[in-house]
Image (tube, rainbow, N blue to C red; front, side, top):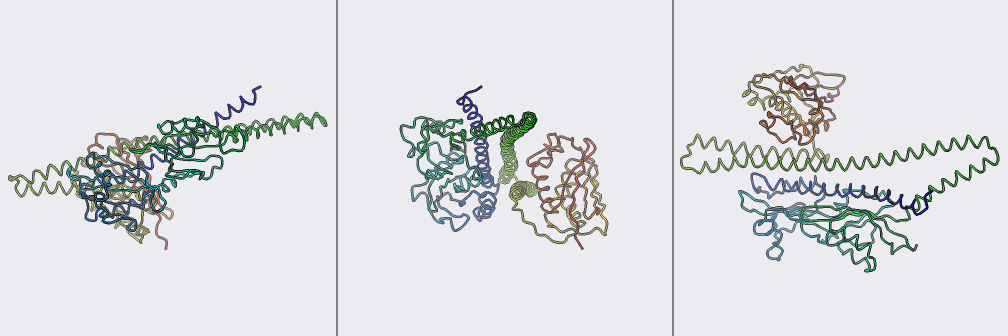
Length: 553
């Protein structure tokens, strides 16, 4: 039989293992969230049109509402002066960084082209702010910097540990500065070392590992406890955010281990006492009762074991999902870079050609068409990014009205008629004249059908067929967009509505796209209370089925 010390050691090891998984999950969540919010600034900084007339104010308003971590957003021009921002009440218009000797950050991003995040600054509103500097270049010339002020309280709002009474969280940076403390014992913006005595060597070693970006478990004496010899159990994991490195830690009292062990011993003692009592009175009855209790305990242990396993599996799955999201983020940045570079190259080449004296009016018109198409392509990509961000944050707004689906389809066909004509695609429409109207946003539904019809034409060979059918079924309007193109296999069907997913084939690469169209389409349809599905056979074509509620009489 194991001694109390051995039992405590085993329970403590399991407890710390579970606590470390929780810490890793929270650190990955914060890291992914922060990278995603900075990416929004990076996208608008690379607009092909350069600095807009409103100095990004309209973009700032959208990002401020969608991101939910920025205290304020500003644009600093090439002279170091704040010329725009949102919200206006938090923007120091006319403030010049060169005049106040605070220009190091904008000089750094101008010279390196890299994103830079400042050290934490305590602001007037008792907010610990991080200034994110994103350089803006146009044709390789520095135009200024976008600055996003990330507030500490908005970062903390992204994860919730308030419901856990036994674990307390804190965050420090690589210099030991306190960024967050759930217990309220440490003031944010002050050094964590101010609260540690030199004699607390084990605690100092743990903090040193945190500052060096390591993760792990540990324990140190609780100097605030009334019980001598009581330790604090700690699990910590790094958070890496551009040029910053933080560490998040969860702490719990060693008394929690004792409580778990005592609760087990109490149950065992209760069972033993009842067993003796019943044996003294009715041996035969006690035998069967003990047998029943034993089975109940086994089931309870098995149930709790399954619950713990399920919890661990859920955390591991969530961690894997975060890694997958990180991979998708990398692929997305690569895709955005490609989508930016290709039209920018075409625009640059066309612009240089227009400067030639030998460029006649016909060639000049063609070059201008290329530039306009490239600008339109970049505008569509930014619009898609903003749409998917609004959908995922439930910020998409719809102008609802009673509309005819037949009119929506006909307008959508007009929009893509030039593309279908170039490929010789035969378009057919079968919509009854008495089909009931639907209640929806006309422009957004046109966007849905333009996307579905455009994909059908894109993945159908020249001379192919695309048809649109609609009918009423059990109080709903069902519309089907069908083609006889390349089709998809089962694996592709499972991911076709995922963000950034593109079918890995030669045709797809020729067709291009950013992988957001069907994700946006699905979000718009579901925003109307409808559904969208797809059926497909490789080599025979695909059929997308849209279901919308019909207008009630």
